[in-house]
Image 1 (cartoon, rainbow, N blue to C red):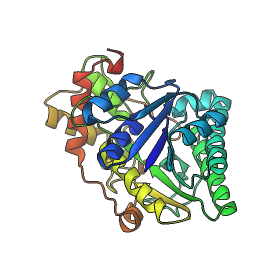
Image 2 (cartoon, rainbow, N blue to C red):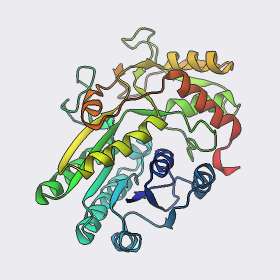
Image 3 (spheres, rainbow, N blue to C red):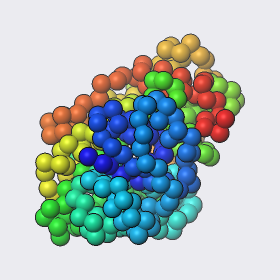
Image 4 (spheres, rainbow, N blue to C red):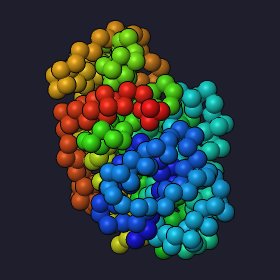
Length: 337
């Protein structure tokens, strides 16, 4: 099978690309490199020893999508393309709504025009309301607190409606929790082009000396140590989840959502202490004020993915912090070096 990855040079996409190639899939990447680097794709080739097609372009371009699908006999699409910085989405909501929703519609229209039936959508736990009981199941109430989350919520609904209108259509909505870590080789990893959106890059950049100290936002949450608890997931486990989702989509129709997480919550300080213990590197930190909208805790019930996809996270917190640091110390300034 040939799989098109929109946003294919991104953090999660490149790790998924490796998993696809290692599992016998052919692949095509499409990316405009707005928040990624073609160097990441060069390194995937180096790691896997396998070739794949690379297209530079915007996933909002329906005609480009159609040409790519036809030229490379694409059988399925994993739609990664989209802006993803929560803070920027609050400051620039129209940018996020235009890009993220338009690209989803363009992908669906291109699929309709070319007869491609299988879609894996890169969604997020950001679609869940903040007042849910933990752990979160796929039926937990959905409501968002920022434009980024709403673009995922709305894209899910658009995809569901498209699936209802086409009985042959098969879509899997993957709701990620908190991807961290990197490929164990240290050759590819998370490389935020501006201010990081996630905890692990802050920890790693502090460890490598790019930042003087880590700021921990809030110490009075209702958790075991007062800092916020999240469900951190190794990016390689997340990548494998996409392969399982493709296998599921190939034998099902309709639209189904799945949580991808470990089911275990770790606090900010848990992650800091694990990083220090595993890597032998001290992380200086200060306690800062809470950020608006941050929850006490957020973690998944991933049992549906295990039951229906046959997927379960295999890597623990030690592998997450070890592989994250291995990437950062080998690439202090990411792909820009």
